[in-house]
Length: 219
Image (tube, rainbow, N blue to C red; front, side):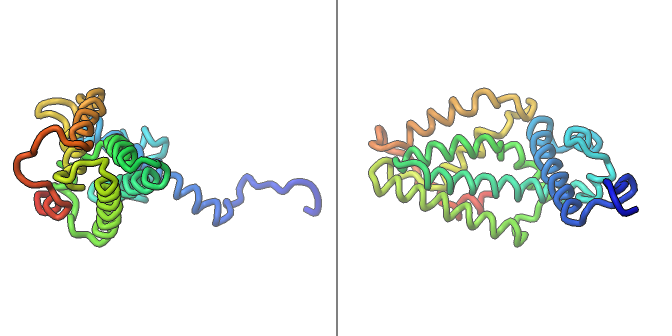
């Protein structure tokens, strides 16, 4: 056949497009799994996740042969997104405390607290992939806090670990409730928390601030 449009009905997609499609499918699966895990808990079936992501079961299992590998990908994705939000807030907000405020609310949208039970049960806390991302996030948040404190915009008896602890606690569901049951209140209580860490301080805190190392040891 020398002219016209070729018949592609049985042709394979170009390799580059195949890879791009596979990457999009993987990202859709991870995003859907994160939303379903945080809304309904760790026992959501792979069938439900596949349907939510708009892919077949075979596609899901090709990317994630078991639940542990899917949880692994979800956790890394959440850390990547949180770090990107911290970097963006630091770069775009002129007021260093506005950067802290923006990051805390954006980090809460990832609902990391709801993932904690799954992370403890199925995730290797010292996995190299996790360590790399955690180190990057911790450094970014610590620098953000230091800038706000140096500018006199954030009280000095609060640490970066306090921020992460507050986000984790307030996004964790109450015992006996659905994972998303407190979602409508999270930002309200985070705002109360942020008002409390803004300088000038209105009271003296008991105990000492939580460092990021403390937070790691706590978990």
